[in-house]
Image (tube, rainbow, N blue to C red; front, side, top):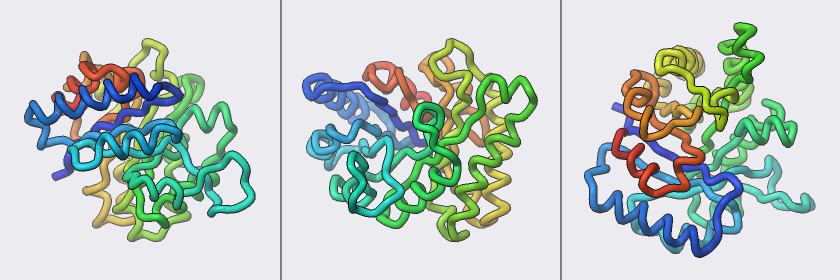
Length: 251
């Protein structure tokens, strides 16, 4: 049975004082409740990784980064390589988030190489896939997300499939007020699992596939009740301890 995983993506938000209060509230809330059936983590801006490591070490909450370079250390000004993130005991690294694909023109080959770099340094890539509104309305959802995940699977060895986390984030449902129904999300998650199985049939049943389309306390329980939705990649709700804890509780 797959353990549910709730990951907060802080995006480009935070300050040292606000982070300290938020992390303390999350840890206190999880420790006070019965969250053993789910795992929780936060992926934070790189300047705050040390703060997270200090605050979360020894707690039930994991931490990670929001991006990584495909390159090893070297002459790549402004980049952060996987070995640097590993020094902060990061467990997770988000790769291929829709905002990186859209605003920084990252293609699926680059995302695949980033995932490969994360795995090489012993961390878990959260591989994001998702379609735009235009692509959904054109009936291209399964083709688009299949191509995005396929680029990653093609580059990795079959045994590496077991070490992935996948996140389906319909771009049209992020911060727009629109939501995929649980049934719509489940359809995509089921295809992604079938695609994983085609690469490694033994590993696919254990790979966690998160939903990242504006999951909130109000819709979390119904989404997480779908057979192939194994958690959430949470944006805005992850910045409010009460909301984040409510989603963890739903998991």
